[in-house]
Amino acid sequence: MLQSTRRSLPMSLLRAREVVMAQFRPILAQHGVSEQQWRVIRVLGEQSPLDATELAERASILAPSLTRIIKALEERKLITRGKVEGDGRRVILSIAPKGQVLISQVSPESSAIYDEVQRRIGHERYEQLLDLLEGLIDLEKK
Amino acid sequence: MLQSTRRSLPMSLLRAREVVMAQFRPILAQHGVSEQQWRVIRVLGEQSPLDATELAERASILAPSLTRIIKALEERKLITRGKVEGDGRRVILSIAPKGQVLISQVSPESSAIYDEVQRRIGHERYEQLLDLLEGLIDLEKK
DNA sequence: CTTTGATATTTAACATGTTAAATAGTTTTG
DNA sequence: CAAAACTATTTAACATGTTAAATATCAAAG
Image 1: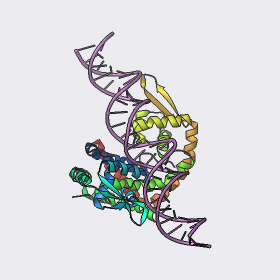
Image 2 (image 1 turned 30 degrees about the horizontal axis):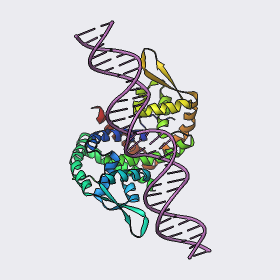
Image 3 (image 1 turned 180 degrees about the horizontal axis):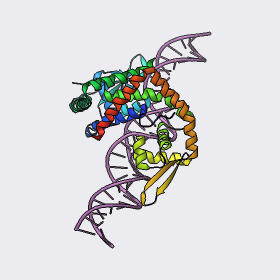
Image 4 (image 1 turned 135 degrees about the vertical axis):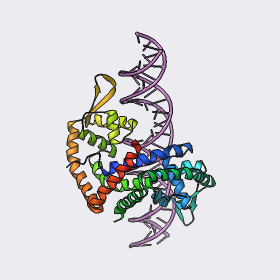
């Protein structure tokens, strides 16, 4: 029997994400970074340096997109790019000072929005949702 | 304090969706339709005709993307496009016979995958997840 | 040591996402 | 009724998603 488009898991995931991101986009736009660029910067803010493959994995961005994003962020001196000695194929990325400044500017506003969303749906439901999503994500690895 | 990228709501929603869609993409690819094209076809399969605005809303596709998708689907005769009498601005879309055939071909395979995902994470958790997502989506309307 | 196979990144090509602006038609106002 | 305001769709421009293929380098076999 046909799945209704209203209670379809992929569709619900997409819409839920849309609702949350709609809160963020204006902030990111004010700082001149896209959603994906911000993900890259934030991952490098947590751990730096990282090679491109690891970075792509952690930021959930496909390699071809990452190539383009890296180029843009490097030109703006938000990140730096280097080569690994011992393996000439790998590219190593690091957060740059300007990138750290950006993180320190955006993070407070970002946290405020997270808190607001969490408050509106309830702390318990929020954690529950994250747990269920994690369970779904882990299906991939089995 | 900084949100970890691992337990970030937008990131988790994105990854969870990715896991589910990874199951679907091969099927859709076999039938030569993209994920978004399939959403449009499926929505029209549920209700047809629909005007472009309604269709965009229900398929969670932005108007500019819908314009391009409609063009492609109409050329392949999967949907048909008409004008409304009384309002010359509106475009009306309907599912075409070829589109209905496609739905009848893809739906069984699609359902099988839904069932499999549901089985793997558990029926109860599956419904719970949909409920929580719905709650998040409804924040938008308040 | 060189050929074969695997891995990391990039390029290419096309579809979609995203915001802003343009177009065309409709409704509201004065 | 004519100007102004509004609505629906399209176009434009650029970023990203997606798959496949190309490059470059490294590792394994022979």
